[in-house]
Length: 122
Image 1: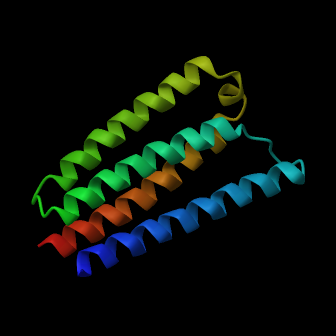
Image 2: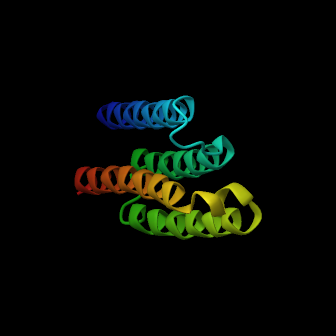
C-alpha cells in the first residue's frame, strides 16, 4: 500500500507541475511575450509521462536495479524525439532555446522522481 501512495503522490505532483508549465506557456502567449507551439510541449509531456509511468510500474513490481536503465533509455528516446522535432517543425527553429528549457525542466522533474524511487527501493 505504501508503494501505491508513493506512486500516486508522484503522479499527482508531476501532473500539477505539468499543469503549471502549460499555464505559464499560455500566459506567455496571452501577453505576447513568446508564442510556443503546444504540440511540441504535449509531445515532451507525454514522453515524460510514459517514462514516469513505466518507472512507477517497475517500482511497484519491485524489480530492483532497472529503474536507472529505464530512465536512461527514455532520456535517449526523448533526445531523439527532440531531434525529430527540430528537423520537421518550423516553430522549433524559431524558439529553440525555450523548447530546450522546457525539455530540461521536464528532465529535471524526471531525475528528481528517479532519485526518490531509487532511494525508496534500497
